[in-house]
Image (cartoon, rainbow, N blue to C red):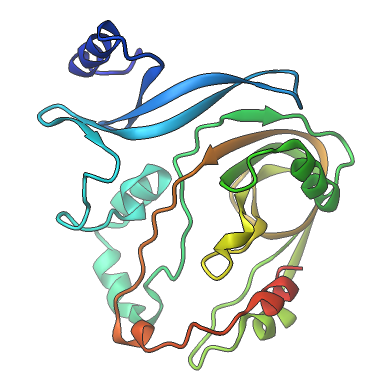
Length: 273
């Protein structure tokens, strides 16, 4: 609790005096979030691991606000540029942003983003020579929580990584399977970097990619892409479990007129290979 403000610390102490156990406050910037945190024995790694459940936000004036009661519709959705490196880049570019937006108006919007405040719940050992196929099989046999989302972060050295990066498209936009048929691919050997991504349960088909969807970036942040294959040399794997999904959709005439009833499962599976 070293970085928690005094008023939040006192609130937590009062809750404990009232008999409420296992509460924890996590700071994100100047915001306080309340979690119920316990330790659970993990048979796979033969030791305990921390399990946290988000309860709500703690406000200095309003007190504890349970999740779901702090409606964002009043203030509007949060933007990815409010956090972390994106916030820093946004601040550095604010003077030239109007010029860039005017000059590249057709290419300005971010079409899709999946983000999370990564807070590792578990570390799973990985070993030299493990490739992407063995990695997926290994996690599927090691993880019991198959109906919630897993954020994945693996840092270290890789003997081999193969990625793709789909080039920009113009209207009328072709199907993803056609775009990826001619995708540029990149290969890296004995490279340091980070692989991040998500595991999504099967029932989210249509909203996101079921299974594992990973991206790689080199340690110098100069190259990367969507992961097609990798071979681990010496890396550390962390998992962040989350049972929450917050989705913001575009509210435009074009989006509202699209036919989204057709299943793209087979096309998506082929494109992800």
